[in-house]
Length: 70
Image (tube, rainbow, N blue to C red; front, top):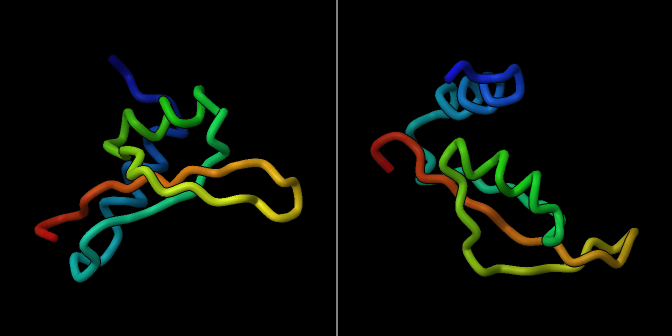
């Protein structure tokens, strides 16, 4: 299966991060199932942490992916 441009960009970004970091994190709107699936294909997983996006009042969820040897 060939990767799309977005997946290539995410994977190249993760590969370029310094190995001193144990993981990479991002916040995504909790109800954005398509976005969560996109990042899950690159190894990101929900870690159970929720927050509120102040400008919109929408709930966000944190996703993490382990990096390198971290």
